[in-house]
Length: 353
Image (cartoon, rainbow, N blue to C red; front, side, top):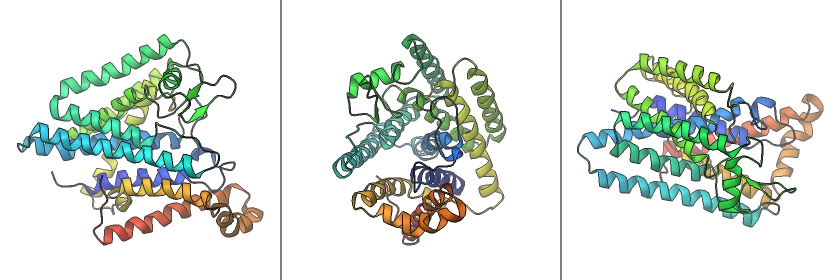
């Protein structure tokens, strides 16, 4: 199957959304839809990372499975996938090391977004190469039901006291995203235990990618609706929660991602609409990793605050209040990186780990 512009566009729009929500001018003034839920719930921002993991699964279906069907060695495909996963994981850790080194109030953190992407990519690649669809569906069910059981056995879903946070504290110690000063317990939204349901998100993307390859659009539509309904129903007993990556959250976000995949494919590949976001999509890792490094370097060099004050907040705040300049800075940050990936794409430079 040829490379789909719609998938690059969906991946790219997801990366652009990541940059938009990760880089406000002032973290104290962010519009509510551009913030993560404080704990339970699901804002538009909470959809971004699950969408990316879902797209990872779709990409595996469109990139690895055709090669397997054409006679490529499973061992060779596995080695290539594992090495790529290791490079992505190492890049994520390296970015965290740079942040801890350069930013005065930062501390070293081992988990992270790229690290979770790497683990989920490795897992879904193994499932794609060595298992059939029935086994993959059983794995999705086992991951969701098993993780639900672990959360229930943990006794609490509250911050710091839940089993995911306790596991992260036991494994990583203080090298996690947040530390509760009162108890010394840690929590990481990309922690170890939460990677299990995240793999289920990626496997759902793999199954959606297989349907897309076979042009089973009705199945995609029905699956998207079913995931939304099941996620909403499950949330009556187990809340939607990105920090814990609850099974209800997996299904709810996978439902939206499936419908988005279908809509992008229908409008771009079938109807010829422009593939907005494609430039980000073909250089997704470069854009995300580069933006993270820039997010570290600007404040480390003492440049971010003067840039924000002189170009945005200083003249916009009296006219529009403090939220508009914060959003304008984030939008300008996205546009800067769009120009970078546009130039890279024009020169045929596609950074792949």
